[in-house]
Image (cartoon, rainbow over all chains, first blue to last red; front, side, top):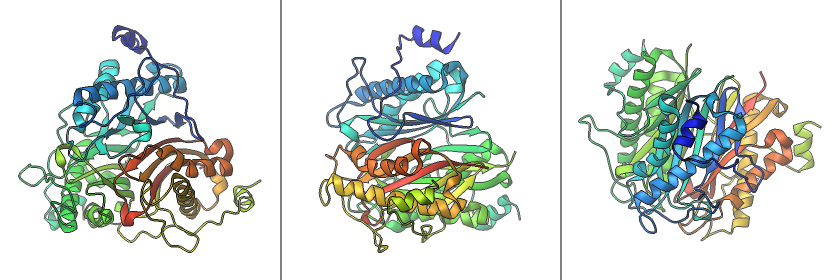
Length: 153
Length: 153
Length: 153
């Protein structure tokens, strides 16, 4: 089963690559590693999911925001490498959660991204990660995630 | 003197690899680089060191927490590569300190991890790093550190 | 036109490599990648730019702080590789902005670093990046940026 088949089975529709509004790009490939920019959570209608977990949103809503963020990252990754079956290993996520200073369940939020990776890529999707709390993120997005992926030659 | 001898001399006992409780792993190797997940500070009895520096803890207690975090990272690294003498160079740390917005001595805290690296690995342990303040970390751990290490073929 | 010519044209004078005051180094090269430590904004007189964006400083002042931070990073990069014309591609920035929890214009601040990279290196300077808010940074510096650069053999 290809990655695209798996995404279809999961009902996941990838967006095109993120469109940075400044002097940077959604991803850079160096050797066999692709470094993806920090992405925020986009709804299917293209609007951002905003708000702080612990005040404006529940951890469950944060989980969904992290899942949407990963969908955007996969869209940018596909734009970079053409075919997601070229993914050899997801190496690392830095998952940043916009939250209050009392919130301590960042891992539960970032699981929304991690679970999707393993659902889509299986063992190749098992990655190293950090999940941390941020006092503020751009445009008040709820989650920002950056990712490193190893791809085939 | 092997790295294991050095650890023994320093009285450092490595734990087994961290056990993530979600869809991720303590480390991923890609080529000659090992990317280690964000680790928190574990006491010898396996419980977490928690609390914010500047409120619940002094910088000195933070230093000790960073040192304990590095011991955990080295445990996970050993599980990945088998033998710590295969370390060619510690490349980079991202050291994140759970603290108040007035706290400005993050470097003094993260030195607890950096000093141990240089004690153990000598010049090979001299790494690039960032030391920064976070408003919140998982389970209220005092420090979270992720690491990139170059290893031999 | 060499990178040094371009810097001269822009009126940018590079400082020597940053001098860490602990057991770490400004940069580590592994293979063709250079990992640069988190740098803060240094004025031309060598003093730090400090303060939180949203309280002590405007986003425009933050932009200038990010630009100064990138000048410091380029100074450390030059010390590592000798000649900035060996830069093959700027891979990734993590741009961290010292700010209040209400501040949401981190990208506008970090643009000060990104714009300089593209001014100096052209397409080779187009990088992946994350721009995020931090509740606290060392010595209350306004911005901290770390960078990964691909260099020629």
